[in-house]
Length: 244
Image 1 (tube, rainbow, N blue to C red):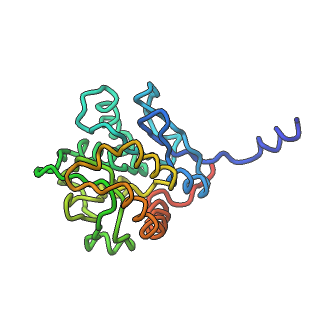
Image 2: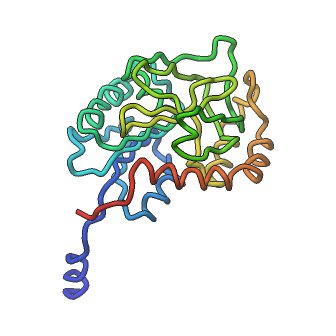
Image 3: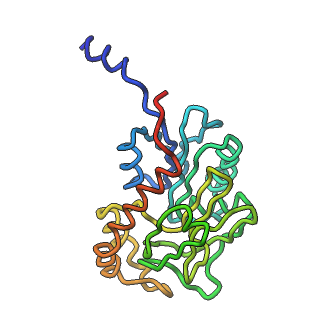
């Protein structure tokens, strides 16, 4: 036992990524898998369940805020506190990624409005994505991405649009060098998608939503490209970890 403990104590600590989730059984999914494979450790916090967010990211290599069923406009304290907390990674210029709700929080923080589509359309299923010229120069993008949302965000004046869509034009953006937001979900494993399809089936009747079978069939067609993109995208945001 002493030898094992001694050997473990000599191993370098893995740099941490603050990982913010919004439900008790939510998972960082493929994003978490890829970050751990790249050499990071995940510091998982769930603010709706009372977990605090750190006052500084000096002990973290970056942060990810994931999605959730709530709105970025909800009056709950944790929504307001998370949105205000984004001042921390922005002030410290630490890599930050917001996914769906996390992107909407970032847009709100930067002065962009979050709201439903004026004609009531949602994006629930697979929808086309088109990179902007800036996005094309950055990397190759998938032509179809997976969505599960009823609101979108305005592009903040100080942000750069990277990818656009037909129904919700603002799909991916960057603010400065280190803050990124995407409206779509590349993090879902197959098991996660199956749970979403079962638990969110009442939303398939919403305007513009796709039936559950289309979600799973679309995954067989489009997911390999989406996964490859995510691997590259996370590398651009977080780079290769440097052990502390």
